[in-house]
Length: 89
View (cartoon, helix red, strand yellow):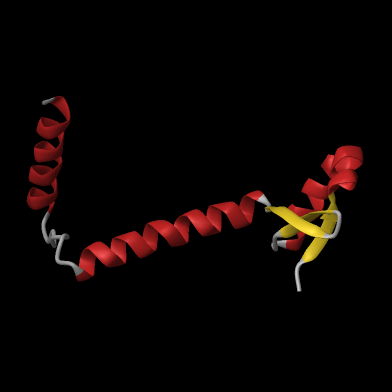
């Protein structure tokens, strides 16, 4: 079960709430009138969620055949050069 905090508690002690979010590594649900309004997450959890999203997108592209294998340094340098040309165009 998620930890909860009232909207009033955030107004009175946002620093403590944020510290708790960073310590707990779990979302803290913000409640108002016994109804959930949103969630507060710590920086570590945010970074983890962002990394998972990037990895899921990369896996999706791999499965769709949108990736390529680079085996040598020459292939890597050629790929970088191609990206530089596309970026400057």
